[in-house]
Length: 360
Ligand code: NAD
Image (cartoon, rainbow, N blue to C red; front, side, top):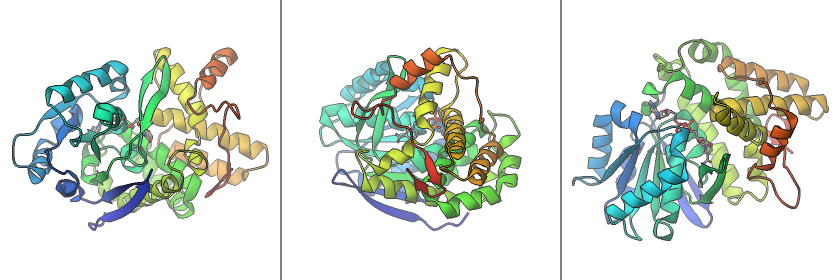
Protein backbone atom coordinates (compact mmCIF):
# COMPACT_ATOMS: atom_id res chain seq x y z
CA UNK A 1 0.00 0.00 0.00
CA UNK A 2 1.37 3.41 -0.91
CA UNK A 3 1.83 5.91 1.93
CA UNK A 4 0.55 9.19 0.48
CA UNK A 5 -2.85 10.54 1.59
CA UNK A 6 -5.87 10.91 -0.63
CA UNK A 7 -8.00 14.03 0.01
CA UNK A 8 -11.53 14.40 -1.29
CA UNK A 9 -13.50 17.62 -0.79
CA UNK A 10 -17.29 17.38 -0.82
CA UNK A 11 -20.14 19.86 -0.45
CA UNK A 12 -23.03 18.03 1.19
CA UNK A 13 -26.25 19.90 1.85
CA UNK A 14 -24.33 23.16 1.55
CA UNK A 15 -21.71 22.10 4.11
CA UNK A 16 -18.09 21.15 3.51
CA UNK A 17 -16.99 17.64 4.22
CA UNK A 18 -13.48 16.30 3.71
CA UNK A 19 -12.45 12.65 3.28
CA UNK A 20 -8.81 11.87 4.06
CA UNK A 21 -7.38 8.40 3.43
CA UNK A 22 -3.88 7.49 4.58
CA UNK A 23 -1.83 6.11 7.45
CA UNK A 24 -1.64 9.49 9.22
CA UNK A 25 -5.13 10.70 8.35
CA UNK A 26 -6.35 10.58 11.96
CA UNK A 27 -3.63 12.93 13.13
CA UNK A 28 -5.44 15.66 11.18
CA UNK A 29 -8.30 15.49 13.69
CA UNK A 30 -7.21 18.70 15.43
CA UNK A 31 -7.90 20.69 12.23
CA UNK A 32 -11.57 19.78 12.37
CA UNK A 33 -12.50 20.25 16.03
CA UNK A 34 -12.91 23.84 17.10
CA UNK A 35 -12.91 24.74 20.80
CA UNK A 36 -14.40 23.23 23.04
CA UNK A 37 -12.57 19.87 23.03
CA UNK A 38 -14.41 16.97 21.40
CA UNK A 39 -15.95 13.96 23.07
CA UNK A 40 -15.22 10.48 21.71
CA UNK A 41 -17.48 7.50 21.20
CA UNK A 42 -15.43 4.45 20.31
CA UNK A 43 -16.20 0.88 19.20
CA UNK A 44 -15.18 -1.51 22.02
CA UNK A 45 -13.17 -3.82 19.78
CA UNK A 46 -11.19 -0.90 18.42
CA UNK A 47 -10.62 0.52 21.91
CA UNK A 48 -9.22 -2.85 22.96
CA UNK A 49 -7.12 -3.56 19.87
CA UNK A 50 -5.70 -0.08 19.14
CA UNK A 51 -5.34 1.67 22.54
CA UNK A 52 -1.96 3.30 21.87
CA UNK A 53 -2.96 4.65 18.47
CA UNK A 54 -6.22 6.03 19.88
CA UNK A 55 -4.30 7.73 22.71
CA UNK A 56 -2.01 9.31 20.16
CA UNK A 57 -4.91 10.51 18.02
CA UNK A 58 -6.67 12.03 21.04
CA UNK A 59 -3.47 13.60 22.42
CA UNK A 60 -2.70 15.08 18.99
CA UNK A 61 -6.04 16.86 19.16
CA UNK A 62 -5.98 17.99 22.79
CA UNK A 63 -3.47 16.94 25.48
CA UNK A 64 -6.03 17.09 28.33
CA UNK A 65 -8.14 14.22 29.63
CA UNK A 66 -10.69 13.04 27.09
CA UNK A 67 -14.33 12.25 27.62
CA UNK A 68 -14.63 8.82 26.03
CA UNK A 69 -17.57 6.46 25.79
CA UNK A 70 -16.85 2.91 24.64
CA UNK A 71 -19.75 1.02 23.03
CA UNK A 72 -19.97 -2.50 21.62
CA UNK A 73 -19.94 -2.39 17.82
CA UNK A 74 -22.43 -4.42 15.80
CA UNK A 75 -26.04 -4.09 14.70
CA UNK A 76 -27.22 -4.36 18.34
CA UNK A 77 -25.90 -0.84 19.03
CA UNK A 78 -28.26 0.78 16.49
CA UNK A 79 -31.27 0.95 18.79
CA UNK A 80 -33.46 3.79 20.11
CA UNK A 81 -32.48 2.68 23.64
CA UNK A 82 -28.79 3.11 22.86
CA UNK A 83 -29.47 6.45 21.25
CA UNK A 84 -31.14 7.58 24.49
CA UNK A 85 -28.12 6.35 26.48
CA UNK A 86 -25.80 8.36 24.20
CA UNK A 87 -27.91 11.51 24.68
CA UNK A 88 -27.67 10.89 28.46
CA UNK A 89 -23.92 10.63 28.21
CA UNK A 90 -23.66 13.80 26.07
CA UNK A 91 -25.77 15.58 28.71
CA UNK A 92 -23.55 14.33 31.52
CA UNK A 93 -20.55 15.82 29.68
CA UNK A 94 -22.35 19.08 28.96
CA UNK A 95 -21.66 18.89 25.25
CA UNK A 96 -22.64 22.37 24.06
CA UNK A 97 -24.28 23.51 20.82
CA UNK A 98 -20.84 24.21 19.29
CA UNK A 99 -19.33 20.96 20.63
CA UNK A 100 -17.90 18.11 18.56
CA UNK A 101 -18.49 14.38 18.68
CA UNK A 102 -15.86 12.05 17.24
CA UNK A 103 -17.06 8.54 16.38
CA UNK A 104 -14.49 5.78 15.95
CA UNK A 105 -15.74 2.46 14.63
CA UNK A 106 -17.56 0.60 11.91
CA UNK A 107 -20.77 1.53 10.13
CA UNK A 108 -22.96 0.68 13.11
CA UNK A 109 -21.16 3.01 15.52
CA UNK A 110 -20.98 5.77 12.89
CA UNK A 111 -24.71 5.42 12.11
CA UNK A 112 -25.92 5.66 15.73
CA UNK A 113 -23.38 8.25 16.88
CA UNK A 114 -24.01 10.32 13.76
CA UNK A 115 -27.72 10.23 14.60
CA UNK A 116 -26.99 11.32 18.19
CA UNK A 117 -24.70 14.13 16.96
CA UNK A 118 -27.31 15.32 14.46
CA UNK A 119 -30.03 15.58 17.08
CA UNK A 120 -28.11 16.64 20.21
CA UNK A 121 -28.83 20.36 20.64
CA UNK A 122 -30.21 20.24 17.07
CA UNK A 123 -26.89 19.18 15.64
CA UNK A 124 -23.31 19.40 16.85
CA UNK A 125 -20.08 18.92 14.89
CA UNK A 126 -19.46 15.33 13.86
CA UNK A 127 -16.18 13.71 12.81
CA UNK A 128 -16.00 10.09 11.66
CA UNK A 129 -13.01 7.79 12.03
CA UNK A 130 -14.08 4.63 10.18
CA UNK A 131 -12.34 1.44 11.26
CA UNK A 132 -13.96 -1.16 9.00
CA UNK A 133 -13.64 -1.54 5.26
CA UNK A 134 -17.38 -1.02 4.87
CA UNK A 135 -17.28 2.21 6.83
CA UNK A 136 -14.24 3.50 4.89
CA UNK A 137 -15.79 2.90 1.48
CA UNK A 138 -19.42 3.59 2.29
CA UNK A 139 -21.00 4.27 5.69
CA UNK A 140 -18.77 7.20 6.68
CA UNK A 141 -19.40 9.06 3.41
CA UNK A 142 -22.56 10.98 2.56
CA UNK A 143 -24.10 11.87 5.89
CA UNK A 144 -26.80 9.24 6.34
CA UNK A 145 -27.36 8.28 9.98
CA UNK A 146 -29.82 5.71 11.30
CA UNK A 147 -31.03 3.35 13.96
CA UNK A 148 -33.08 0.19 13.57
CA UNK A 149 -36.59 0.24 15.06
CA UNK A 150 -40.06 -1.35 14.89
CA UNK A 151 -38.55 -4.53 13.41
CA UNK A 152 -37.16 -2.65 10.42
CA UNK A 153 -33.68 -1.81 9.23
CA UNK A 154 -32.79 1.92 9.37
CA UNK A 155 -36.37 3.27 9.29
CA UNK A 156 -35.41 6.39 11.25
CA UNK A 157 -32.42 8.52 10.55
CA UNK A 158 -31.13 11.91 9.52
CA UNK A 159 -28.78 13.49 7.01
CA UNK A 160 -25.84 14.88 9.00
CA UNK A 161 -22.53 14.63 7.15
CA UNK A 162 -19.29 14.32 9.06
CA UNK A 163 -17.18 17.43 8.67
CA UNK A 164 -14.23 15.10 8.26
CA UNK A 165 -13.87 11.42 7.57
CA UNK A 166 -10.38 10.33 8.58
CA UNK A 167 -9.68 6.85 7.23
CA UNK A 168 -6.54 5.02 8.28
CA UNK A 169 -6.25 1.56 6.66
CA UNK A 170 -3.96 0.52 9.54
CA UNK A 171 -7.11 -0.16 11.60
CA UNK A 172 -7.98 -2.91 9.13
CA UNK A 173 -5.08 -5.13 10.28
CA UNK A 174 -7.29 -6.37 13.13
CA UNK A 175 -10.56 -6.55 11.21
CA UNK A 176 -12.22 -9.98 11.38
CA UNK A 177 -12.56 -11.79 8.05
CA UNK A 178 -16.38 -11.57 8.20
CA UNK A 179 -16.16 -7.77 8.35
CA UNK A 180 -13.76 -7.74 5.37
CA UNK A 181 -16.33 -9.70 3.40
CA UNK A 182 -19.08 -7.24 4.38
CA UNK A 183 -16.93 -4.35 3.22
CA UNK A 184 -16.30 -6.09 -0.09
CA UNK A 185 -20.06 -6.28 -0.72
CA UNK A 186 -20.29 -2.47 -0.64
CA UNK A 187 -17.07 -2.10 -2.63
CA UNK A 188 -18.40 -4.41 -5.37
CA UNK A 189 -21.69 -2.45 -5.35
CA UNK A 190 -19.84 0.83 -5.82
CA UNK A 191 -17.73 -0.68 -8.60
CA UNK A 192 -20.84 -1.92 -10.45
CA UNK A 193 -22.40 1.54 -10.17
CA UNK A 194 -19.53 3.74 -11.18
CA UNK A 195 -16.18 2.06 -11.37
CA UNK A 196 -15.30 0.14 -14.50
CA UNK A 197 -11.58 0.12 -13.59
CA UNK A 198 -12.35 -0.86 -9.99
CA UNK A 199 -14.70 -3.65 -11.06
CA UNK A 200 -12.26 -5.07 -13.60
CA UNK A 201 -9.35 -4.90 -11.17
CA UNK A 202 -11.32 -6.61 -8.39
CA UNK A 203 -12.48 -9.30 -10.80
CA UNK A 204 -8.95 -9.80 -12.16
CA UNK A 205 -7.63 -10.30 -8.62
CA UNK A 206 -10.46 -12.55 -7.48
CA UNK A 207 -8.24 -15.58 -6.93
CA UNK A 208 -6.21 -13.64 -4.34
CA UNK A 209 -9.41 -12.25 -2.82
CA UNK A 210 -10.73 -15.80 -2.50
CA UNK A 211 -7.48 -17.03 -0.90
CA UNK A 212 -7.65 -14.26 1.71
CA UNK A 213 -11.36 -13.86 2.32
CA UNK A 214 -13.40 -16.86 1.17
CA UNK A 215 -11.53 -19.43 3.24
CA UNK A 216 -10.81 -19.12 6.94
CA UNK A 217 -12.46 -18.37 10.22
CA UNK A 218 -15.02 -15.54 10.24
CA UNK A 219 -13.76 -14.16 13.54
CA UNK A 220 -10.03 -14.14 12.73
CA UNK A 221 -8.15 -11.19 11.27
CA UNK A 222 -6.69 -11.83 7.83
CA UNK A 223 -2.90 -12.26 8.04
CA UNK A 224 -0.78 -9.93 5.84
CA UNK A 225 -3.93 -8.67 4.13
CA UNK A 226 -2.88 -5.05 3.63
CA UNK A 227 0.29 -5.88 1.71
CA UNK A 228 -1.35 -8.58 -0.40
CA UNK A 229 -3.63 -6.46 -2.58
CA UNK A 230 -3.93 -2.78 -3.65
CA UNK A 231 -6.36 -1.79 -0.86
CA UNK A 232 -5.29 1.85 -0.78
CA UNK A 233 -6.19 2.25 -4.47
CA UNK A 234 -9.40 0.25 -4.15
CA UNK A 235 -10.62 2.10 -1.03
CA UNK A 236 -9.67 5.43 -2.62
CA UNK A 237 -11.53 4.59 -5.84
CA UNK A 238 -14.65 3.40 -4.03
CA UNK A 239 -14.66 6.42 -1.70
CA UNK A 240 -14.21 8.80 -4.66
CA UNK A 241 -17.12 7.23 -6.54
CA UNK A 242 -19.41 7.45 -3.51
CA UNK A 243 -18.29 11.02 -2.79
CA UNK A 244 -19.05 12.00 -6.40
CA UNK A 245 -22.55 10.51 -6.24
CA UNK A 246 -23.55 11.97 -2.86
CA UNK A 247 -22.03 15.31 -3.83
CA UNK A 248 -24.42 15.47 -6.80
CA UNK A 249 -27.49 14.23 -4.94
CA UNK A 250 -27.18 14.66 -1.18
CA UNK A 251 -30.88 14.09 -0.36
CA UNK A 252 -31.28 11.02 -2.57
CA UNK A 253 -33.68 12.57 -5.03
CA UNK A 254 -32.08 10.91 -8.06
CA UNK A 255 -28.67 9.46 -8.82
CA UNK A 256 -27.89 8.60 -5.16
CA UNK A 257 -30.60 5.93 -5.35
CA UNK A 258 -28.12 3.89 -7.37
CA UNK A 259 -26.25 3.29 -4.11
CA UNK A 260 -29.24 1.20 -3.04
CA UNK A 261 -28.31 -1.50 -5.56
CA UNK A 262 -29.09 -4.78 -3.81
CA UNK A 263 -30.39 -2.96 -0.71
CA UNK A 264 -34.16 -3.15 -1.28
CA UNK A 265 -34.15 -6.93 -1.02
CA UNK A 266 -31.03 -6.86 1.19
CA UNK A 267 -32.69 -4.81 3.94
CA UNK A 268 -35.77 -7.04 3.85
CA UNK A 269 -33.63 -10.18 4.20
CA UNK A 270 -31.49 -8.58 6.89
CA UNK A 271 -34.53 -7.64 9.00
CA UNK A 272 -36.18 -11.02 8.42
CA UNK A 273 -33.04 -12.99 9.26
CA UNK A 274 -32.61 -10.97 12.47
CA UNK A 275 -36.16 -11.70 13.57
CA UNK A 276 -35.66 -15.34 12.55
CA UNK A 277 -32.69 -15.83 14.85
CA UNK A 278 -30.15 -16.53 12.07
CA UNK A 279 -28.97 -13.00 11.29
CA UNK A 280 -27.37 -12.14 7.99
CA UNK A 281 -24.84 -9.34 8.22
CA UNK A 282 -25.52 -6.17 6.24
CA UNK A 283 -22.88 -7.14 3.67
CA UNK A 284 -24.23 -10.68 3.25
CA UNK A 285 -27.78 -9.40 2.77
CA UNK A 286 -26.63 -6.81 0.24
CA UNK A 287 -24.59 -9.44 -1.65
CA UNK A 288 -27.66 -11.66 -2.00
CA UNK A 289 -29.74 -8.63 -3.03
CA UNK A 290 -27.16 -7.65 -5.68
CA UNK A 291 -26.89 -11.16 -7.07
CA UNK A 292 -30.70 -11.30 -7.38
CA UNK A 293 -31.08 -7.95 -9.17
CA UNK A 294 -28.17 -8.74 -11.52
CA UNK A 295 -29.81 -12.08 -12.41
CA UNK A 296 -33.19 -10.38 -12.92
CA UNK A 297 -31.66 -7.66 -15.11
CA UNK A 298 -29.74 -10.27 -17.13
CA UNK A 299 -32.91 -12.36 -17.62
CA UNK A 300 -34.79 -9.25 -18.78
CA UNK A 301 -32.01 -8.64 -21.28
CA UNK A 302 -31.13 -5.24 -19.77
CA UNK A 303 -27.78 -6.25 -18.22
CA UNK A 304 -25.15 -8.37 -20.01
CA UNK A 305 -25.26 -12.00 -18.86
CA UNK A 306 -21.43 -12.01 -18.81
CA UNK A 307 -21.44 -9.07 -16.35
CA UNK A 308 -23.99 -10.80 -14.11
CA UNK A 309 -21.75 -13.89 -14.08
CA UNK A 310 -18.73 -11.74 -13.20
CA UNK A 311 -20.60 -10.03 -10.33
CA UNK A 312 -21.58 -13.41 -8.88
CA UNK A 313 -18.03 -14.79 -9.34
CA UNK A 314 -16.60 -11.76 -7.57
CA UNK A 315 -19.05 -11.91 -4.66
CA UNK A 316 -18.36 -15.63 -4.21
CA UNK A 317 -14.59 -14.98 -4.33
CA UNK A 318 -15.07 -12.60 -1.42
CA UNK A 319 -16.78 -15.35 0.57
CA UNK A 320 -20.20 -13.71 0.24
CA UNK A 321 -23.50 -15.57 -0.25
CA UNK A 322 -25.36 -15.15 -3.55
CA UNK A 323 -28.50 -17.19 -2.80
CA UNK A 324 -30.79 -17.51 0.22
CA UNK A 325 -33.97 -19.32 1.23
CA UNK A 326 -36.45 -16.53 0.75
CA UNK A 327 -39.11 -15.96 3.40
CA UNK A 328 -42.67 -16.74 2.31
CA UNK A 329 -44.26 -14.36 -0.17
CA UNK A 330 -46.49 -12.46 2.29
CA UNK A 331 -43.65 -11.92 4.77
CA UNK A 332 -41.40 -10.71 1.99
CA UNK A 333 -44.02 -8.26 0.70
CA UNK A 334 -44.55 -6.89 4.22
CA UNK A 335 -40.81 -6.50 4.74
CA UNK A 336 -40.31 -4.89 1.34
CA UNK A 337 -43.16 -2.49 2.14
CA UNK A 338 -41.23 -1.44 5.23
CA UNK A 339 -38.15 -0.47 3.26
CA UNK A 340 -37.53 3.19 4.02
CA UNK A 341 -36.90 3.87 0.36
CA UNK A 342 -40.52 3.19 -0.51
CA UNK A 343 -41.86 6.39 -2.02
CA UNK A 344 -45.59 7.06 -1.87
CA UNK A 345 -45.45 8.39 -5.42
CA UNK A 346 -43.75 5.46 -7.12
CA UNK A 347 -44.18 2.44 -4.82
CA UNK A 348 -41.17 0.23 -4.25
CA UNK A 349 -38.01 1.28 -6.05
CA UNK A 350 -35.73 -1.40 -7.43
CA UNK A 351 -32.31 -0.36 -8.66
CA UNK A 352 -31.26 -2.43 -11.66
CA UNK A 353 -27.82 -2.31 -13.28
CA UNK A 354 -27.59 -1.63 -17.04
CA UNK A 355 -23.90 -2.25 -17.51
CA UNK A 356 -20.92 -2.07 -15.21
CA UNK A 357 -20.52 1.66 -14.54
CA UNK A 358 -24.09 2.58 -15.52
CA UNK A 359 -27.38 2.37 -13.62
CA UNK A 360 -31.07 2.76 -14.45
P1 NAD B 1 -19.90 -3.02 12.33
O1 NAD B 1 -19.89 -1.60 12.67
O2 NAD B 1 -20.85 -3.90 13.05
O3 NAD B 1 -18.43 -3.61 12.54
C1 NAD B 1 -18.22 -5.00 12.36
C2 NAD B 1 -17.51 -5.61 13.57
O4 NAD B 1 -16.15 -5.24 13.54
C3 NAD B 1 -18.03 -5.14 14.92
O5 NAD B 1 -18.06 -6.25 15.79
C4 NAD B 1 -16.98 -4.13 15.40
O6 NAD B 1 -16.90 -4.10 16.81
C5 NAD B 1 -15.72 -4.68 14.80
N1 NAD B 1 -14.67 -3.75 14.44
C6 NAD B 1 -14.77 -2.48 13.95
N2 NAD B 1 -13.56 -2.01 13.61
C7 NAD B 1 -12.67 -2.99 13.90
C8 NAD B 1 -11.26 -3.11 13.74
N3 NAD B 1 -10.53 -2.16 13.15
N4 NAD B 1 -10.67 -4.25 14.16
C9 NAD B 1 -11.41 -5.25 14.70
N5 NAD B 1 -12.74 -5.21 14.84
C10 NAD B 1 -13.36 -4.09 14.44
O7 NAD B 1 -20.17 -3.29 10.80
P2 NAD B 1 -19.87 -2.50 9.45
O8 NAD B 1 -19.87 -3.56 8.41
O9 NAD B 1 -18.73 -1.59 9.56
O10 NAD B 1 -21.17 -1.57 9.27
C11 NAD B 1 -22.45 -2.10 8.98
C12 NAD B 1 -23.48 -1.02 9.23
O11 NAD B 1 -23.24 0.08 8.35
C13 NAD B 1 -24.91 -1.47 8.98
O12 NAD B 1 -25.71 -1.16 10.09
C14 NAD B 1 -25.36 -0.64 7.79
O13 NAD B 1 -26.73 -0.33 7.81
C15 NAD B 1 -24.50 0.59 7.92
N6 NAD B 1 -24.28 1.32 6.67
C16 NAD B 1 -24.52 2.66 6.69
C17 NAD B 1 -24.32 3.39 5.52
C18 NAD B 1 -24.56 4.88 5.53
O14 NAD B 1 -24.51 5.50 4.47
N7 NAD B 1 -24.81 5.47 6.69
C19 NAD B 1 -23.87 2.76 4.35
C20 NAD B 1 -23.62 1.40 4.39
C21 NAD B 1 -23.84 0.68 5.55
